[in-house]
Image 1 (cartoon, helix red, strand yellow):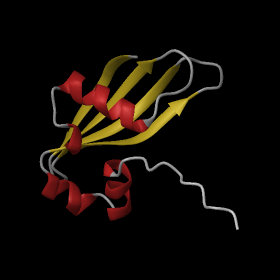
Image 2: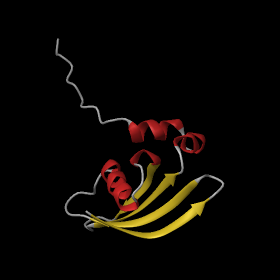
Image 3: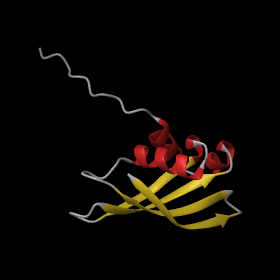
Length: 102
């Protein structure tokens, strides 16, 4: 996966940077978790402080536009982002367990 950052805006009142990027990938569109890890390494930032808001891809295309936010601290992130979004971003994927049949 290849990431190219196209735009960065500083939102001082919200203590965050708004990042627009384009990604190139092979096969299926990468998950938000994978994109967040790649953005963190590209920005040299803490992965916990990045929230991927949107991933826009077109059918058949191996490129996508990404909109993400990088916060200054966890406290600032908790003030702005909905609690559900933070839980969703940080929770590891749980494997579905099959219920025993009776």
